[in-house]
Image (cartoon, rainbow, N blue to C red; front, side, top):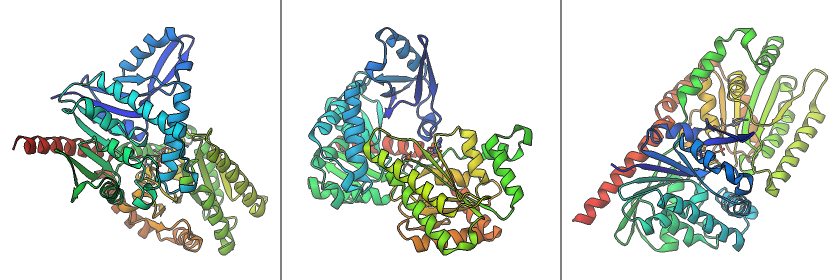
Length: 483
Ligand code: ADQ
């Protein structure tokens, strides 16, 4: 049994440097949690970028940093500021991200970004090659590293390689516009197993492989010479128990132990028991449809004026990629929309939108989930959307209504929510009205089904299913070759 190497753009630890001392703090994100069962003990290594560029790291601190990372089973890939600009902010986030989310007009096709992407992918592949031997298993994550599987396969044909894409794979008509489309596909095809969140993304990928590379595709197997690659969908779950346990603690907290946020939310509920909180949480990203949601909210207030002074929309937007121009423009647009709508509708005792532009500690996230009558999550495109799953997991009394975009991968598994097309303001306004008036019994009936499903298909099961499938694919291939 070889070892397991996980590779992603960012490491699952945050480095803090102060007065020459280094601390590596483990991240609490979904991926890090999900990989716990895969990334444990001395037999696994996580390779990625630390978040600090070479220019940020004083040479003399390097051994200390490496030691701090090694304690967490991690090893860093060194990137210069220029590489981060070209590879991460450039090709990853100005070419692939917009294209794969159907924002073709935002996608920049610059040769310099592509060159940087290739160079940095080779750096990640070299980091794997320096640490791997025959029989090892390598799991490559996401759109920043699509060339890595082939780069590793070329040098080490006898390792198992899995690749998982966390964002949508677009339809062939969108994907074909990319000047480096064949190279990207061939890069991923160095894997033994390729995973997506949904069957649709899988289907789109297979169609691009067939039409652009002319390869033989049978059901979900791709044959490339004597190499057979399996393609499948693995919808990512959440750490269900962590969210439901945190919610239980939240509900049982004495007033003196409650956060200021929770106390404020409670006071509002006590003064007006009919008031409804509608929650919207996303990274500030154009794919999440925040500006459109604000416009739809204005439409809703005009269509259903009876809810004025009754509903409050809480918008939590997490700062993201703020040095990419599109994100700066979007931030300005959202600031202006919130200002305009609040200016138009506010009264002395009511502000319709509460807007937070920041990251929040986990406890406050739970305060918001548990205090909101409705979660309104309507991305224009989203690989999965874990926030929708987290909201349902925290509703331990089974009340609460989820309004979810059809364009989110999670919509496939969350049919019991109110599914809407985020571009349809009429339908969205009616869904808000339906959510506000939904009988408690109906809320409970819908949520109990969702909760059962989410508790079962949690993030640990996702990671284990992927690893099991990768193992059996490698065995299948070995059996074929020996025949
Ligand atoms: P994201 O686009 O980041 O992920 P999402 O799946 O919703 O989107 O995950 C966001 C995470 O950030 C959630 O776990 C949430 O709890 C956390 N979060 C949100 N707001 C926060 C705040 N203010 N403070 C702190 N934490 C906050 C990408 C893809 C998704 C896909 C995931 C996983 O774009 O489609 O679901 O990867 O594959």
